Image (cartoon, rainbow, N blue to C red):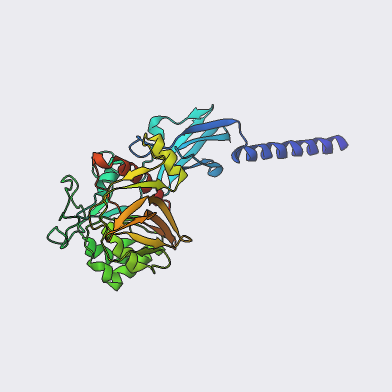
Length: 370
């Protein structure tokens, strides 16, 4: 009888030891490695600080954040079928790997291919839709935009007050509005707004609704509930209309009085510096930002507690005065969402603005994670 009891005790201990060993494997105590570089949808540039999550049998066994150039190595992984999720904010990629030895993600496994729901409101002076196309936010079969383009310009297609002497800038005929509703409908329909993760407000869109309390409250509630708004230059009126300027951004008076068309800027984020240099762009000691049109809008000051500044100009000219140390791009969070504002433009495929274009590639992914 004693021998039987001793055998049962040894058997129980062995079972418990085996179970603990399996649990440890599931929690990431294996011996294998997964490495790679998380890439943009177009597979042409890396995604800074992307998130990597590895699961087995429905249990997360490891999580890691990539470096500023999207590179990562996840150690101590178990063998077998692993579910790997790559993500940056609302951009994602999910793959399954049968891991039997150390493995590096291959080119067709590393680019993000699940996109946020995005609406671009057209404007006469910006073309963020071209930036989205460039980074690969497209239907993989047709090549068409995998985002909505919403008509946002005044009905005659021109602003009543030309921007820097221009009533409009050249727009891509290949990217016309593709929705049955316009900006007026979008901003006055809270349920429609809620369908989107990110809304881009191109400079030169209709400004009238920035004095409409219903429209402003809808947009503010959208942000509070997790939505992200990107506004450029003259669309500042929507940001100012939604938020107390002492809490976030205080816009300069008189309005629309910037006259300098380029500035040497110091980047305030070390990851962005590393990322741009990785793309072959010199940013030390400064980078030239030239995406301005005359009569641009400046942020005079901002709440440093709530707002992140990305770029600081050595000097700008505003209302006839030369002003040093003014920031030109900002992000801040509100509720579960956030806002990005820049005083400069994104004209799309303009070779003279290559640095701005590259920064916008970076900012889009940062935006999606606000």
